[in-house]
Image 1: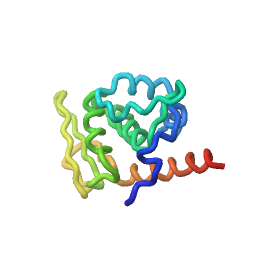
Image 2 (image 1 turned 45 degrees about the vertical axis):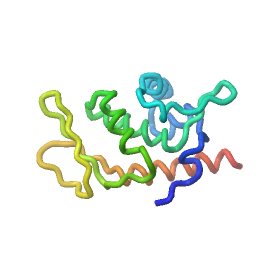
Image 3 (image 1 turned 30 degrees about the vertical axis):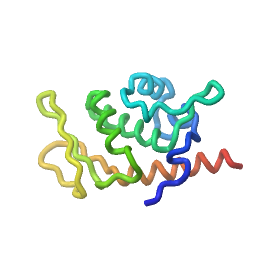
Image 4 (image 1 turned 180 degrees about the vertical axis):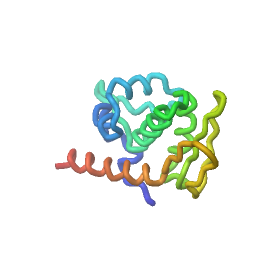
Length: 141
């Protein structure tokens, strides 16, 4: 899937991005402040921070992974490798936490051996692009 122009262009405020991913603005700002990956920090213009669609997808993945119990920094590094380019290479991400250790397995199969989070990466990506499209369309009218 070809990503739209707002995927890499800072087009969304922090509040809009938080609303798009179903998070509070405070939580998103906290993740942004703690994020060790500079490419998801957004761009500051006229005293406001603007985020890309890609940034929103990254923080949405962080949110879902941390809700499952993945430590936030681990979730950020994992989400960073998934949101690095455009659409994810694999359809699913299987996440399993055993004895304090989190294991990730990307594949095109949603089968998991035992209890695990099976994250539909491609589905989340497509839904996020659709939500971004709606917000972007609102701004242009």
